[in-house]
Amino acid sequence: MTSRMLELSGVHAYYGKSHVLHGIDMEVRPGEIVSLLGRNGVGRSTLAKAVMGQVQAEGGIRFQGAEILGRKTYEIARLGIGYVPENREIFADLTVHQNLLLGMKGGATRQGRWTLDDMHQLFPRLRERADTPAGVLSGGEQQMLTLCRTLIGDPDLVIIDEPTEGLAPKVVEQVGQFLQEVKKRGVSILLIEQKLSIALDISERLYLMGHGIIVFSGTPADLKANDAIRKEWLEV
Amino acid sequence: MDFVVITLLNSVAYGLLLFMLSSGLTLIFSMMGVLNFAHASFYMLGAYFAYQISTWSGFWLGLLLAPLLVGGVGMLVEWHGLRHVRRFGHVAELLFTFGLAIVFEELVPLIWGKASVPYAVPAQLEGALFSLHGAAFPIYKGFMMAMSLGMLAALYGVLTRTRIGLIIQASLTKPDMVEALGHNVPRITMLLFGGGTALAGLAGVIGGNAFVTEPSMAASVGFIVFVIVVVGGLGSLGGAFLASLLIGALQTFSVTLDVTLQQVLTLIGLSLPADTNLARVSLVQLGPVLPYLLMVAILILRPRGLMGVRES
Image 1: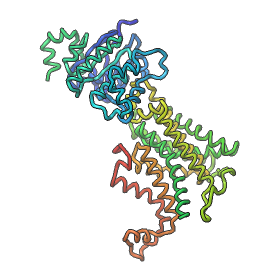
Image 2 (image 1 turned 90 degrees about the horizontal axis):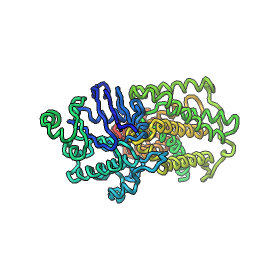
Image 3 (image 1 turned 45 degrees about the vertical axis):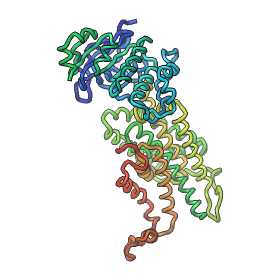
């Protein structure tokens, strides 16, 4: 098995006519939580979309050693990359249970790491509200639902875009604990965040983005020690 | 009273046929965000295919095969045409379907001639189902209603009780997210387009012999179907159902009621100068205009339609 779960080399990406990513190099190793930090608008979500084949991109994007750039989104997902987008994208008119069913991939032949029961044990609210339209859940519940919906498809790597945005501090803590549980089951995580605290707490490594390029990479300790970088690229 | 019952049944039969057409158009619009201008052409193809098959093997085989053939043509159009045009935006898609409608309209007379073809109701379905004081309700209208209701039940069952229905429902609002969960949305889109056009084809099979199978049949029903999806609300199946029945009733009653516009206005306390042409206009003459008047009124008073969720 390759020592790289995900590897980006010289990735350029475009949103319509805008050139958003200008040559990104980064990697996520098996079992790691890696955070991608940066202010709004620097291209973090575009990077997630480039990996998922949702925006036009050039360069190299390899998943478990295989080139995935140019493949269709559903093929990339079936290879084992889960994606939790920024605005959660729950199916509001469908029930909580139906949302979870949609996360299951058809034709799966092996037992995945997660079952519906696992999800219900971790988040009893999802069982209690199984028949409720997902649109009426609270923000925190919706976030849990969208995380569970992705994980039930048994990805080896999950890209999570701003999971704590708009959530109360207590729920943010819950999300952090959940991500640790995900990692324990051998799933790698690429966490896109703006909140420094959760990223410093749970990540093995961090990348910091500014204007479509990586401006810093290192461990949480390295970033804590580097005031100048934090001030220039993170603090408002 | 008997006349009202028979006319009401006729209007429901026609309304359900219109729903068979508008449901496919609505589903395609919901998922792809584009109005398929060629939709009524698939209705015409259904009628001609069924006529052709009926000349070889009778009506029943045509009923089975023609919608499948039309659905197949629909899938080919989506897979080899529409999806390549999509990257140039909705205007390009609209123009593509508009051009396709013209192609079908020109091709059909080349194959089957410019005059109508003798696509007849099968002998088993001729005659009256029942009569009320001399007013007969034909067996074939009852058959049309049964087919439409069967289709409605099947459509509801597929959308709400099957896995593919769940994926379609989710794809109607968030196709990118559904694809990111590992579902082959391009294939689902092709199947949905094929399904929608097959429904139009089925409407053509059972409408072609109830009315007339001729090259202008697509144009005559096409505008009405667009009126239905606008009145019902773009993207709303429930709205399309309601609007289909409403417009079915509007058209059927207007051609059967022997009253003038003046008489109708008198009922609501208004009147027109007696010596004008307008005062002598009958509802029969006004009938074809009424759906469009309704559409204009809806667009002014409730632009998103009766049950629509989209503004555009």
